[in-house]
Every structure is written in C-alpha cells, then in structure tokens.
Length: 103
Image (tube, rainbow, N blue to C red; front, side, top):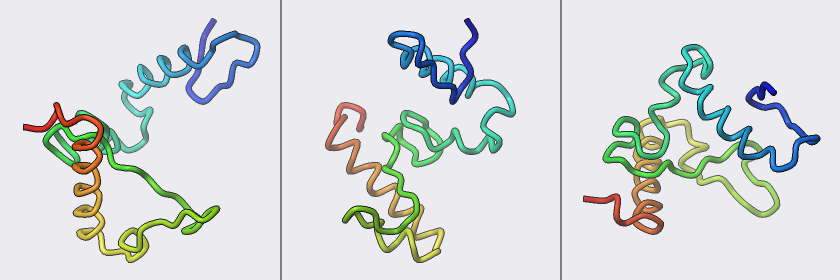
C-alpha cells in the first residue's frame, strides 16, 4: 500500500507511524518542501539556529487563540529580532528538554 504525505488512512490500524515515516522520507526528495531552505531550521541541524539545538516553537494566526498569544516580537516584522528570539527560545527549549545536546 502506498502512503502519501498528508493522507489520512482511517482504514489502517495504527496508520500514524506509517504516515510519519513516509513524510520523513518524502522530505528528503528534491522539490517536496518547495523551499529547500526550510529544512535548515529543523531539530538537530547544525544550520538554522545552529549548534544542534532543538527547533523553536511555532505560532500561526490568529495572533491570539483561546487565550494563547503569539509573542509580540513575532508580530513586529523585524526579521533580525525574530531570528534572535527564535534562537533564544530554541536554546531554552534545548536546555529544558535535552541538556545533553549542549556543549
């Protein structure tokens, strides 16, 4: 059975592992991501945030949802401040969850 990224297979018990694996493999194929630079900001990459840090949390619109607010720095539009903020919280997340990854 062929599994495509983004396809929900309700008829297959425990389909989540298959979907996860197929998405992970598909991301390695040229053109799948659309923007090849996108993979630079994933966990354990030496590019992106650097130093093999875990990926930072991500927010989307609306800016406030069910009491959760996106940080103001992400709404301001200053790309350098956004990069610094993401690197800072990626480091904090790594320190909290995987301190063994830090030098």
